[in-house]
Every structure is written in C-alpha cells, then in structure tokens.
Length: 128
Length: 131
Image 1 (tube, helix red, strand yellow):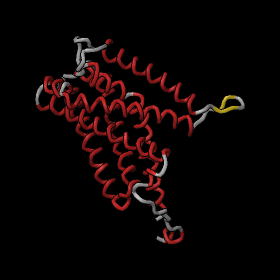
Image 2 (cartoon, helix red, strand yellow):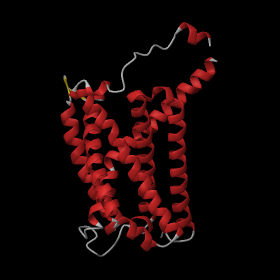
Image 3 (cartoon, helix red, strand yellow):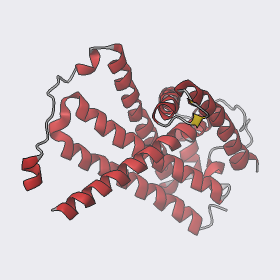
Image 4 (cartoon, chains in turn red, purple):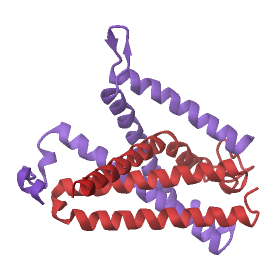
C-alpha cells in the first residue's frame, strides 16, 4: 500500500510538473502563434504581408513543426488540466474522477492526432 | 487503508459560488477559466490541421480566415495574454530571487518576463518565417 501511495504521489508530481511546463509554454509561445494565425495572416500584417502563410510555420522546416507540437501539446495539457481543476472548485468535486477521465482522454486524443499529422507530413516530405 | 483511517481527508464544505465573495477570489477564478480558451484554441488548431490532412492546405488556410475562428482566436489571445501576465507575476511570488539582502518582487519578475516574451516572440518569428 505504501509503495502504491508513493507511486501515486510520484505520478501526481509528474503531472503537476508537466502542467507547470505547459503553463510556461502557453505564456511564452502561444501568444505569438495566436498573433500569427488570428491577426497577421487574416489581416495581411507583418510578418506575412501576403508573402507567406501559416502553413509555412509547419512545413517550412522541422523547427517549425517542433514549435507547433510543443506549443499546441503543452497548451492543451495545461488548459485542460487547469480547467478540470477549476470545475472541481465550483461544486463539481464529486465528479472529480469523471472530469479527470474526460480531461485525460481529450489531452491524449489531441496530442496523438497532432503527433500523427506532423509525423505523417515529415515522413512523406511535406515538412522539409 | 490503515493510513486512510489514521489520516482522514477533511474538506471544508463551501458553496459553488464561494469565489463571488471577494474580488480577490473572483480574479483567481477568472484566471483559472482563461485556461478554457487556451485548451479550446489548441483543439481548434488541431482540427484545422485535420482539415489539411484530410483535404488540402487551402482548407486549413480558409479555416483560419473564417470570421468565427478569427473572433474566437482574438478573444483567446486576450485571455492568453492575461494568463501570461498572471503566470509571470505568480512566478515572482512563488520563486523570488535573492540578491544580496533583498529578494526580488513579483512585479519585477512580471516586467522581466514580459520583456522576455517580446524577445522570444520576435526570435520565433525570425526563426520560423524569415530564416
């Protein structure tokens, strides 16, 4: 029982560590991605100015694909983890297990889909 | 099981609207709920990539130009910046740096990290678009 408790405590520490890392990623990298996709591209502003488009972020080179993966996966984990925690604080504490299950399912599906698309484009040469 | 009996978990019962009792609690809850926009934008972006994967690059680009997506993304940008500001302030509050006899204040960490955010954003654009 004691070993199991330690395992759970370690898993909690790892999950909170990823949550914190995701918070840093969402704070430092997500604003620039949002600016590029929601303002610069649709409104034809710097740095696109009609020349390149956001698809270049992904296919331009491997670093761009890595940037997309880290930013989106980190933000998704942080966002879902924090939101499910916030829901338990507004009266849904008795559904904590179900909220965690749904949250981790969404995180897993999202990250697997993201990795699959990027890996497929890398392997078929779409990402140069 | 024995451990659970010796150390029972005690939870203070509070109403679902406890956070409306003070401005401080309300701002805390607003900060927590900004995460919903961070998560939704990430999911929307992945959905956009799926349109590209199952259709064409133009589908992805048209999706980004959809007025509803632009509108949501602008709101998400505001909440993401709010998340960044509160996160940077929190960093300064929980991990102050000791310099000589004094410790750094949270607002100093906030300013330093905001400057870093601008630098990181510029470097990201330079590396990913112009290189």
